[in-house]
Length: 129
Picture 1 (cartoon, rainbow, N blue to C red):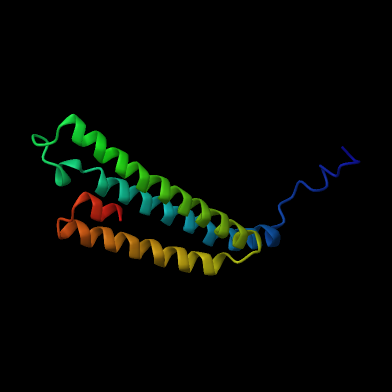
Picture 2: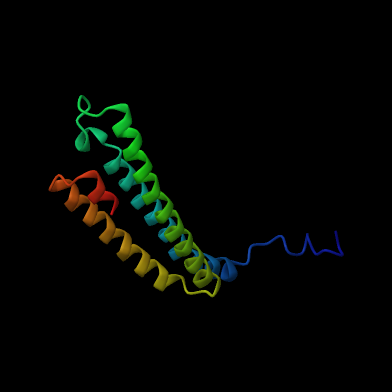
């Protein structure tokens, strides 16, 4: 135990812990905002009865609609992957406050657009575009 300094380093360094929390808090808030935006997107889009008349859609129509929507999902996943990569690079460089402001603003704007589209009863394709 002596050679590794386990007993000597058992105390919490409050200054270092405060610095880590101050740097990590904006990053944590950014993740919460992203999860909230994705959840709201799924909740708004998950209401299929708003977009489709359950009695009018056939199995073939739903299958062709789902193929087109999965293409939108693929494009979104690529864009989200780039977003995660660039935000992680900036977080690694220590720039967490700017990321929180920009990410929060973009996600709140995204939710506002989705809510506006929901209020005007937009079509399913409009939501995905």
